[in-house]
Structure formats: C-alpha cells, structure tokens
Image (tube, rainbow, N blue to C red):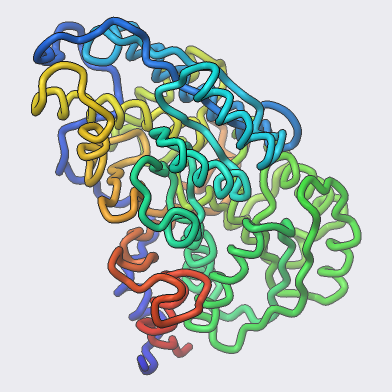
Length: 461
C-alpha cells in the first residue's frame, strides 16, 4: 500500500498547474476546414451517395441547454465539410435528429428506427449517462458505428460494452469529474473540513460522488461529507437542500447539478445568500451555454466543465484553432460554443481524418472496419487542444481544465479568471488502459477508483 506524501508535492507530481499551460505541436490533423484546394485527392472511385447520420440529443426540457449546442456543433462541422464537397470530396453529410429527452427506452427504439427505417450510416449525440448506457449496447448489437458527443461513463466501456468495436466517446471519462474537483479543491482550499453535496439522484450524481469520495480520502485529510442532498432528475426547486446546507455551516458545497437544474439552483442559492457563507465547487457550472449564466452569477465559484472544454481556454493567441472555431460558431449561431458544441464538432473531423487515412490505405470508400481501425489511436488538434482516442477502449481524452468564475468587461456572462485556471493532465487522473476492470480482482466502481486506492499515497497537510 502507498504511504504518505506532502500534498503540495503530490499535486506537483500529478502535473497540476495554475495559469496557462504551453501547447506543443505533436500532430498535424486538425478539426477545422482546410483552405480550398489543399485536400489530397482521394484514391479510387468514391460514391456520391450522402452519408446519413442520426443525431440524438436533448432538444427540449432542462437538458436542452446542453443538447442544442451539441446539435449546433455537429451541424457546423457538417456544413463546413459539405462546403468542400463532402467526405473525400464526394460524400456529403445528412443528419436526422431525435430528442434525447424521451428517455432510455424511447431512445433505443429510435436508434433501431433510424437504422432499420432511415438507413443511417453513423450515430452521433447522446449526452445523459443513463441514455448512453442503453444506446451503447444497442449500437454495438446492431453494428452501428457511433461517435457519441459524450459516452463518458466509465461503466460503458468497462461493463456495458467492455469489448467495444463500433462505439466511440468524444468526452473525458466521467470519473475524472469527481477526481479533478478534489484536486482543484486541494490546490485552492486545502484546509476545508466540512463538505456538503447536492447531486442529481441517478448515475451521474452517484458516479461523481463515488470518485469524489475516493480521491478526497487521499488528498483532503480530515475533511468529511456532513450532508448529502440527492434530488430527482429534473428537479427545479432546491430551497430545502440549500437551507439545510446553510444551517450545517458547511465550509464547502460541491454539486454536479447540470443544465437547467444548475441554472435554477444558482439563482435560488443567491437568494438564500449561500455564496456569502461558504465556498462552492460545481463540476458542471460551465457546461451550460455561456449566455444562460447571468451577470448575477457569483464570482469565485470553482467552476468545472465536465472535465472538458470552455471557449476561453486554450486562449486564442496561443491556440488559433480555438479562436477560429469560436468566430465561425458565433457567425453561424450568434452565441458562444459549449464543450458539447466542440465535442460534436470535433467528432466529425475525427471521422473525416479516419476516412482519409483509410482511403490512402485501401482506395475507394473504406469499409467500416478500416475506418474504425484508423479512429483507434488517432490524435488530433481540436479547438479544445490536443485530443486522442485510446485504441484500447475507444475513449477520447483531453487534459482537464477548471477555474474560478469572474466577470470581465469583454463578456456579458462569467468566464474563468485567466490568472487562476487550473490544468491537469488527464493521464494522471484516470487509470491506464491495462488496469483491471471491476470484477477482475476487485469490486470497486471503476478501474480508476481502484487505481487511486491502490497507487495514490495519502497526502498529509
């Protein structure tokens, strides 16, 4: 078993930094439209039949402020690729959309309908964990190649489809949310003792709390969770939970409420004066569309974005791909992109790169297995920085970013304080691909939970 280590030394070992991180230039493929005439001519005969996508995402209800940006990111990439003639210059992208708010059973039926009646070639979208679990299984069963905007749940590639062939996920693994929040708290507020939580009572909230607790035991010695508030999915009234947390005089509130739920929560917390009484860490505060957080949003909240991307980082002067993406997205949609916009957008460019690589190897339009082979292990420069798809489990990874909310003159909503952005290498937050999965010598919730228990030393103050 690992021993003890000074907390500051361990955070340095994890590669945690505050402020802008340098970006290298290790890969050449980029998630962006090419200059006219710069694409390499394809090999062999390419059919001109459109490639049909089914995109399932939240188009109504509280989840729509996540789902609609996903749809917009997908459409922007499709329009850019189509403007250049389509994939391999010939096959344009067509998309049909369904509302993910219908729930797991309805989404499974819709996937089957899209495949059998609409004849989709690829599936994209899928945001909520319970929908991811249901849809991933049927996509593998029906052999539908899938580039999910999310597919973040650890359990999907460890339990539901442990030998995935057709399904890929474009978002960081869900366990990183809980782990990264603990790391950021240990970096920013190491002396806090009394922690309260308010989470949605389904897979997302439970999974977050499991991994938050595992990491807390290692990095926050002496801290304890004094209150657990669990709310049904779709809850919009949090008054009782907020009052309880305030009465307990907690040092810190941690939440992974998301979408419209989070917007309703923060406005109610303001009315109760919660932000004046304790620190707040929200794993998904900045996962919503930026304009949905108003000028009343408090400063100093440790704001996460589901371990992924927010439009102010990487900064445009360091990373032109992000600046250009924001400009094109705003021109098309008159708003700023979200992490789901970026992931849906980059997914189509990952597919474009894989198709082109497979074409150079095989000629003609490559078959599905050839495209999958090129997706596995593919690295690409995206608006979010460098992203790579792990060959072993089809998960796309990018370094994790969190920061503190701040109002600046340039924007009518809060952004990250540019001097207090916390970056964390994703490879140091998640189990390596060969780490035993649940049921392989341990019964922990995930490979990452077991990896942290077995390899992280307990940090001393």
